[in-house]
Length: 135
Image 1 (spheres, rainbow, N blue to C red):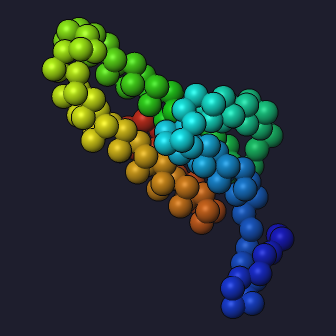
Image 2: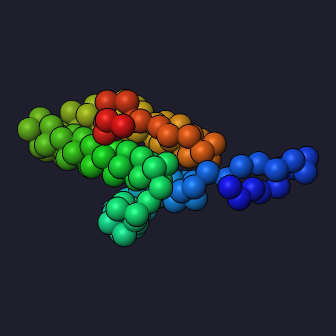
């Protein structure tokens, strides 16, 4: 198995698919925080291109991030539907729904993405609770 050099000069094992797993997790976080939609398209491209040939670690993280991204989109759509039902975007209820959404759903999805990225960087599998696919 290939090795990389650790800070103290000790060899550190490199897990097959670790780079792809980190890429999937990073795209997931970028989709939530910086470039929504564009990063999702990038994640979808990486998923379609690699899912059938990816090592187990990368395939796990690809499946988890795609599933969580789809859930994130569905929750955002649901928040918009609730806003419309409660009176539209000029209603005082709008900010209530937006604040509840961002403090619960969005923040949780970002936290899960950071946890997934940490696991990918450590070369470990990770299942997103509630929104991830079974391993």
